[in-house]
Image (tube, rainbow, N blue to C red; front, side, top):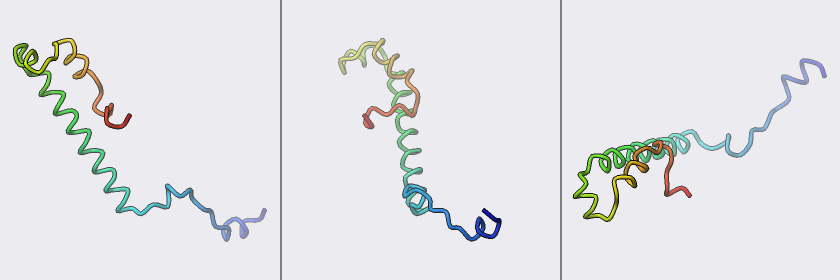
Length: 78
């Protein structure tokens, strides 16, 4: 195939790559905000006293497990 044919040939991207930039930015921003929210909630849970955890029916082990999860591990996405 000669160079002229290569340069004049149009390549089509998958539909996901054709999505609008503002839509992708909006989705990325929403994901970053959710990750920030998860990290903040996990830090707050870890800071609760044992008496407060007992009031909500959770053990320290439950909270340590939850707090050790990475910020991108979103239980709502399962």
